Length: 326
Image (cartoon, rainbow, N blue to C red; front, side):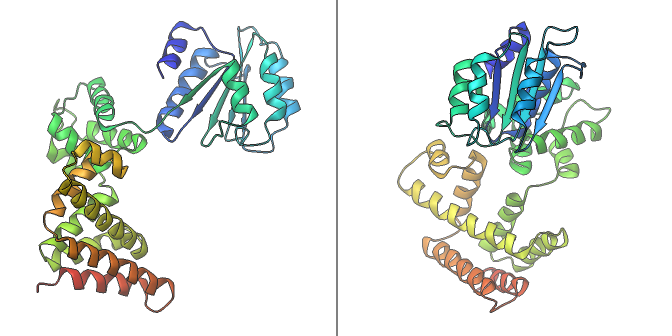
């Protein structure tokens, strides 16, 4: 990403760019910056092509056209699938791009063995933009708050991310809400976060698991009914319960083996805040209880999928059983 930023800053552009990876927010952000830097507001010299079955002859004809009173013509191509298959024609053309034309490709999935991938690597720049870690996201979010002269403590930033998650698109919307809500004040507080931010589903599931661990049946069912009222499906809730039981079981085993939290996060493939919560919750369950809860969840899923029980009844019965005081 440093190369992208440097090219945008200096105006020294490659013949072609490929932005790929799962972090859509950053990809779209760099796309906007590149378009602005290369052609500005001038749509005459901007060609946009989306989806598959694009006429390659038309694309090449556009690329060969001399820009109109400007240094560059920009061709933007999104979700074409050419970096997986069928990109042979354009791959050949990558060696012959005019000095006045720049290509920008936006792809969700790529195959590094494809001709198009290899051709672009030889003639341009490939930027794989993956999901950012929590530290990078915290720094980015703090800068967004600072632009509106808002401050937030490290503890409250961690609380904000643990509640909203690490999806940068969602975080950006919640940051805007917090900035508006705290108009007239320069500090974002935990109360502000609780007042206006949407808590992601897995955080709500954490609350449900917490209630189950202390056998608080009322709170367990309140959490469930609240999710149902917000149009979450019982099967989705069940899936998340299964997932969390599995994560807690994994965390409990890895902690018992003396493995540190950072390494556990890498091994489990989840964010640090999920690891921290899973480790905390693992203290309230025995291994036997976790295995039984996971097995019962899987059994409930099977009963629902085979039509032996309605999904809402199956999930509710599971929650009642495991939140009941012995």
